[in-house]
Length: 399
Image (cartoon, rainbow, N blue to C red; front, side):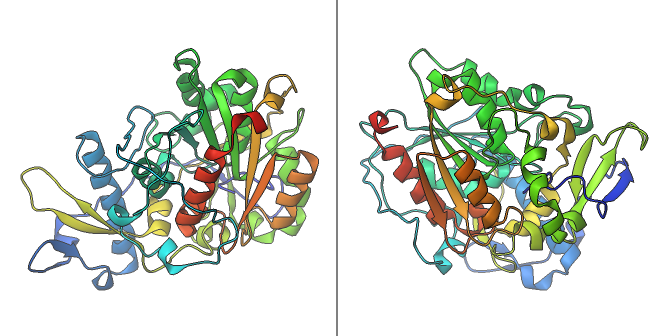
């Protein structure tokens, strides 16, 4: 889970909110080596602090290129989509495929060499909703794969997440937190539908949207996510196993922007423990090489290491939405086809808890990702992509 499961454990650290400013990587600290073609940044020559700083620089350059509408297929907000033309064909199912090194050690601009048939689908439009603490940035591999497959993709930054400019501690309700998502759905044309994909706490967020806009949602896919029943909160569901998840309790840090005599306002994570909790199967030393073309400058191949990117990019999760109970009806929420994608090596949401959610609120179909931690978009991007495509191909009349 991003930041919010198993919330009220006595071992959890408590802090009064303080502001930390991000550090920029000075030009003098960048070390690189030059080849006969394009310059590269040598990760092996950097110490750990500089390496993490490099990831922040990489993310900044990637987002800068996205803002300038350059060639790199990376989306960071809901405002831009990148449909890819050309003939497509459907890949085989990958829900039980063994872990492959190609899932993580691959270049972003070479992520996919196979086409997908999107003709005849009820919709080819995915909306990706991040989990607690994450942002739209976490989907960058899945965005690349889906767009190369001919799909339209929106990756949303929920309120106070990613690059959305809002104080997380000031978020008072689930409706406020989910507003960037509901704004997308409100703006859809009559008859237009999307496939919602929610990760982690994003599962509660897409459930909220399903109740409000059932006619605009073709399918809902819960990826290692909170799949709740009506009158249940995320806090209710995940506090059931609070006592058995020591790592979660050790990692959580409650923030008290209004003082310790008031309820917590947000939940942060101890960055020293986040890899073991969320990214225990994600590549630690090797990641992606991204070719960044900057106008009037030489192209640069930047090594984007997923865990370091997450450490510098994650933000606290607002507490009020986590404890808010959902109100879900069979007429609205229940009319949307639901699918669950489980993660078998998940330290944040154990398999036993995922199975409890599936049993208490059965979806139409369940897929399991072998060898995946809580962040399959990092540890198993190819497999997750193929499952998403397979679900998109399921005829609507069977939902």
